[in-house]
Image 1 (cartoon, one colour):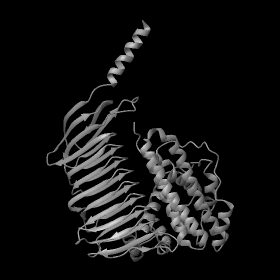
Image 2 (tube, chains in turn purple, orange):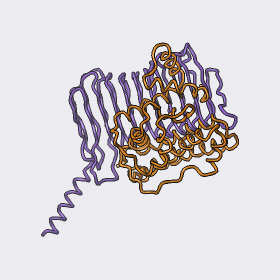
Image 3 (tube, rainbow over the protein chains, first blue to last red):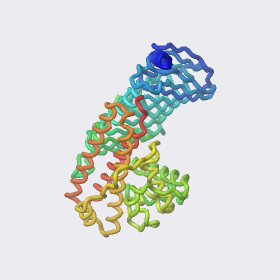
Image 4 (cartoon, chains in turn red, yellow):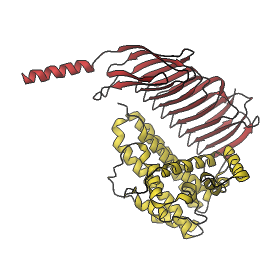
Length: 257
Length: 232
């Protein structure tokens, strides 16, 4: 009898763990400057800013996930895809979130891609191998990956930003606010800065063994006769924004748009 | 801004971080910081280290394994003029042994968010040949000792973090580990290249500065790798 009970328990647990995809559709009140933190290991996280004072969470939880935990109040919400502790192979969960566009957003993933658009607030996004794409006019960004690519595309000016990868490519396609600070750092990833010709910025770019190319005219110089290192320091348009770029072997391209 | 230029600002940066500058002198340094990424990074590191050290209890004892590498640095509470790497990393005015020991540990290990368990015996510092090269390149033995200490600390910090990473390997995907390992190889190749250049030009202190920057990049990458979220 004891064996039978144990067998039934194992079966029940197995059924519980093998739950199929679950659909999510939840709403919460949210202040205009709400702080949202999202954790999702695999799948995707899509965030779109809107003008409503409301947080909307839709999407699907992949097989192997335990539940979606949503905790907080109208000023701050933590959203986490929780996993069963004994599952290693999980199916990705896809979260689609709408939140006030001027809020503060933090997302952490492992392989899940992150896509943020129509957003004016502060974003701090980190992924290991997922791709990060930000569109809109964020006031401040901190974007970091290991191997995933980072791309920030804005039709307006971005306030300030830190971009960091290990091998992932970093692309910025935006205007830079006059007094903003922008720091780019990678080991082997390439960095493309696509910036308007009318920009006002000072650039400090260095690479140990990567190549630096510049549409704005100034040419990178070797820093030592014994090393392949290059540095490029120059200003355009009065030098308002401060842009620093560092790579070990990644190439850097300054492209005039 | 070249690394050589930056070295002329190190003392002022320490004074700024210690809050000892005012008026036009302070304005001059702050203006330089706006224009110089290397000095800005150094100032940030000094501030972070100072903040970390200020919050630490005075009674913290360092792990025995790191002590030999740190001891040479920490035994000198007031570094003399010219001990450039110490001033770069460790501002003298708060250079008390327990705080610094704890801060150095914090810098290289405690921020990774895991318990450090040192299983391996202490690694040796620099080889005798390299020590002789460094000593020959400096004006006096004390500066040479400082530099050897600096390189030893980075070597040990790297080793420490690799130990931590070893223990976390199962939590990371093979792809992520491969990326980290490949990029560590890239940094190691750069370090080898600079060291090789130093063999040709042992008196080129700019090369030493680049070497230190590369070690710092390696420690940064290892720290980051040990903090990565687990894949399951």
